[in-house]
Length: 369
Image (cartoon, rainbow, N blue to C red):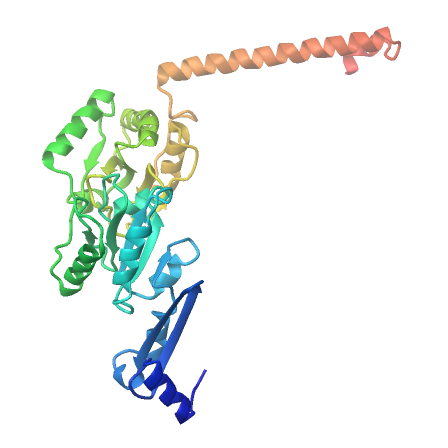
């Protein structure tokens, strides 16, 4: 709405103190019962920002829960996002109160929001918050750099404000997580013991060199070694590595990337772990190709064959089996086919006998069934 009446303007300016002079724009926010917020901008003091942009950054809740419905809108604001991860089964009143108190002072500079820390555990790790502690807080930046709030600090109004101020002033050093050489050696040694010969251990520092190699198609498993679902999936992925190694497909590399030790690479996005991606030799640009089928050896191998840019062929339709396993498999198939054929023949014989007994089929007609 537009207010032109001088008396009304004077009332708002003198009594309610919403603004000091005109022309001014006032935004009323009343998303929650009993929680009305206002924001005022003097139009003549907005030379570097279009009014539309100013309004857009202020028509969201000061603090809101991130969902699949509003995340795209927050992204469109092109502002750094300070995300608070909470355990929604606990009482978070105090941390929400402190978070919102700080947020009120940074409208238009930073978006403040919270998420379910258990549901979005992968997003939490992606922001450099690798332990299980909740609540936890970190910046989601346009550059992809990480600025996690130290887990040993208490989340209260003073410490949250300090973190925000240090970020805006450039005093925070971006956190770059990359597994150490010792971590890589330990992981490689364990993989070899498990039989996954040829598996490449990839870190944040080696990702570009290994994965973006344009001479090879590269399959990468992103995982968290402490998650039970990863432990359950490992035998299948290990077997996949074994089979590709045995088939000597030199154009294909297979690696794994531990997200609890390494910062997730830019433009690699997934909702759950473990996640498998293909980085084709002739197409290293996002969006990257993610496996979405049944998490078994054969489907993964057939998917890799399908999306690889350097084409290769399998010797047969059971690439997940070695020669001995294939022979056993073929014997099983033969026995199954023979058993099914015998069962069908027996049922046919019973059916003919019944029809003959009931007088519905002459004995010489039995071969016609």
